[in-house]
Length: 226
Image (cartoon, rainbow, N blue to C red; front, top):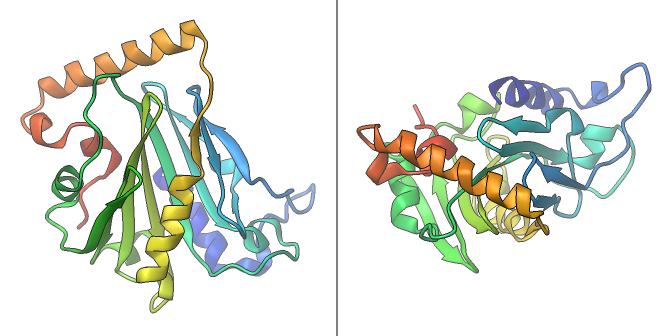
């Protein structure tokens, strides 16, 4: 995941060189299924999914990185403000409690939090430091959020250049659009059972960790900011 973020940062910094390999510009990808699980991500208007960033994560999860289509494809398109967004999903047990602001804040700590809230099951927070460590030339302020998607828990992040309106209120709206574009797809009985088993394995491992009761799934979804 760190390698994917580093590559994406270079893509945002060098738009003239984006996606120009031996086969030329890559076609825009606006929808994708994350990992082996039944979670579908649809990119907000003007943004695309970096196909090379798609990863299956240990335990049945998945990861995707998004950026403006014009930068990822090197072709004209809908204008979109520069931003780097990530989505990762992990299976959770059916009886797991829904995400809440308190758990999200605990996962982000000790980094200070600005605006925060919840809408339509999506919990979000503006983190006031650390964005520049992910995106070179980025604003320290960035957004993180989480929501349940079927039998999975999704985490989202948004990073923008320094001084960008997306580091403020506009970023909350954009990450909200990204969250709204996540959907659960029908799963087979075998996949459903595998998801439950994977979630149980994760929770059993967390039960052995000193901070697992407080952090739960968020411990893996949101590493602590420096």
